Image (cartoon, rainbow, N blue to C red; front, side):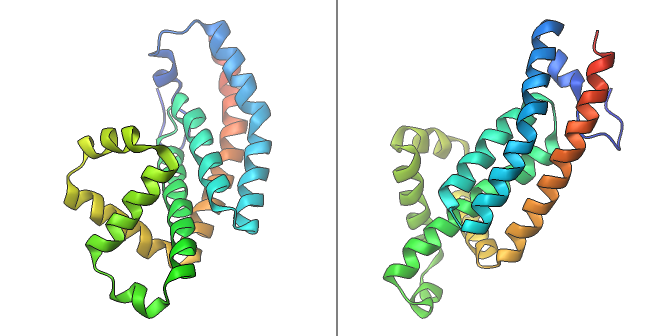
Length: 181
C-alpha cells in the first residue's frame, strides 16, 4: 500500500499480474535510465528542442505509469503538451506577429493545435483522441496549453519538479525492490 509521502505505488505494478523476477528486471532498467532521462529532459529544455522534449517526456511517462507514480505521470503529460505547444507557437510566430496571434479566435488556435497533432501523430491517433473528448473540450485544452506555453516559467517549474521526483523515485524504488517478494 502506498503511503501519502511515497511516490511509487507497487500495488499497481503487482496488479498487472507479472512475476517478481520480471518486475525486478523492469525496476533495474528504470533505475539505470533515470539519470539519462534527467539529462535529456534538461538538454532538450535548454536547447529548446521542443519535439525531442515532448518525446522524452512521453517515454518517461510510460515508465512512471508502470510504477503507479500518478503525480509524476501528470507532470510529464503537462511537459509533453507544453513542449508541443511551444513547437506550435514557434511555427506560428514564423508566420504571424504577436498581434495577429492575439486576435485569433479560440477555434482558430484549436484548429492549429489539431493540425499540429495530426502532423505529429497521424490522423488515426487524432480520431481516437477525439473520441475521448468533445470538440469544445479539445479547444479548451488547446487554449489552456497555449496560454501556459506563453509563460516559459510554467515549463521550467514543471521540469524542475519532475527532475526532483525522478531522483526521489530512483531512491525509493531501490529500497522497495528489496521488499518485493
